[in-house]
Image 1 (cartoon, rainbow, N blue to C red):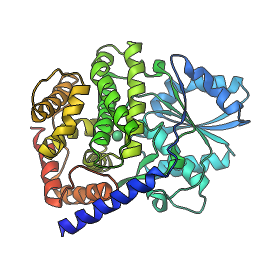
Image 2: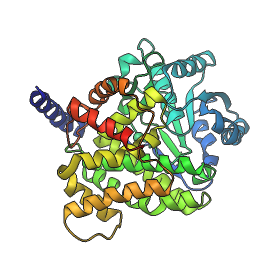
Image 3: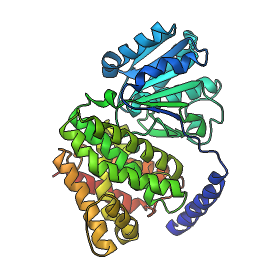
Image 4: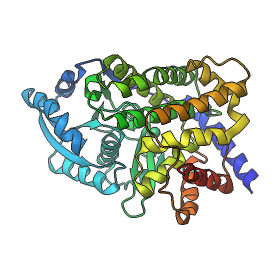
Length: 404
Ligand SMILES: [Fe+2]
């Protein structure tokens, strides 16, 4: 049975690869560099938009958003501010944003923050574009198929890549199932990458979001199909940058060179995975986010080396290339390089205070987690190793064991 499923998944992925080459993978218009946030108001103004829905979490709503909204106001643009997006945003939050957008007759979205506010705003924008559809109807690949209202994404973490991806990941308020809406129309129109906005990120968030970006690069690079030359080079470049700059930014949040390089790396890793796919690390991480509220970056940081170890020799040649890109200076066989790469991920995690395992996993939830993770990964992600239920459960148990 598992073999038949595997053949079906591989056939689907082969077909998807051919189909996806015919699509136009647009990138957002990029506005980057220190102070680039000052250009945000002009983006809306140039399109004649005079009322904007600003979506943030609570902290960014008080720290970063006021200055930007002030500049919008000076440009004659009204801002309607929704500032209650939580980590792992729920469908309830998405509906509240959509309702407010309609009530106030807004004409565009400005999402400022990490993945959560960007994804909640993207999902709300999809609802605005498709009035009769529910979020559930749009779950999965290419179910929106309609242009969204003008959308500007302003990342304040360097990790999610949501400013360039086709995905909005949300959590069902009732079932706690975390799922993704994926459509080319969800790629923001503009991404404003101002490193000054990441200066005050807490150390812990710098670390976990940076490891999320690394997970995007690694999982994209390990996809057996769907990769283009650009995906491979973006994945290698972002891996190199994360190994070089993440711990610098962790040690000194004010290191603007490191902050800027990490934003670029996050963007490239975001493009790589939105084009090629992620994999089992993300599929499992999402179940932890949905059930226990584990921050996405933290879950990925912990799970990444565990899954890479589990993949074994199947991924040695690709991991060897990542090891070279990371500049680890290891000589030897592919296996030696691959093992060194995994070892260095554990070491980076340890140096940045990221635990080796996650204790909150409960045995009673594992069957559900396996179900969700396999349903997310297959057949959509061109994973290098298709997990059986048994193997997936073993990996999840290992994530818990590693905490002890
Ligand atoms: Fe991610």
